[in-house]
Image (cartoon, rainbow, N blue to C red; front, side):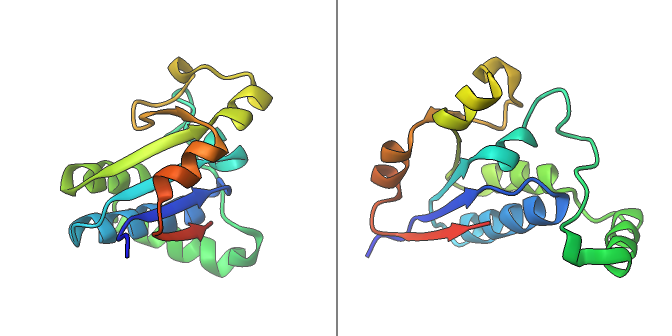
Amino acid sequence: MDETISIVLFSGTDDKLMSAATLAAGAAALGKPVKIFLQYWGLNAFRAAGIDTDHGLAPEAGEVGKAAVDAAARAGMATWMQTLRMAKELGEVDIQACSASMDIFKLKQSDLDPLVDGVEGVAAFYINAGEGQIVFI
């Protein structure tokens, strides 16, 4: 069985971005190839001009979740983008922007942070995912 872990990152809130980054770093540390496919709000978070801004939290986090995330940040916990950069240093992590989402937002690859390796369509994503697991966030 293919060991590739493919993550479809649809959501763009900081907690969900961190979830994807943590999964990618864990898989990379275990030597598994990781493919991240950025769609809609997940893609929007990777705009170069705003990658390090506050993207908020999912509504279910509430005030308690926000307080916990803020406390972790004050304690020095790595951000989601730092975690993704570390994952790319640890192993094979490929981040691709969805071509349809790029069209919707009228983006060019130069509008995105260098963490993004390229642009591909859904068919290419499935081909590159192989027989491995696909996680949707």
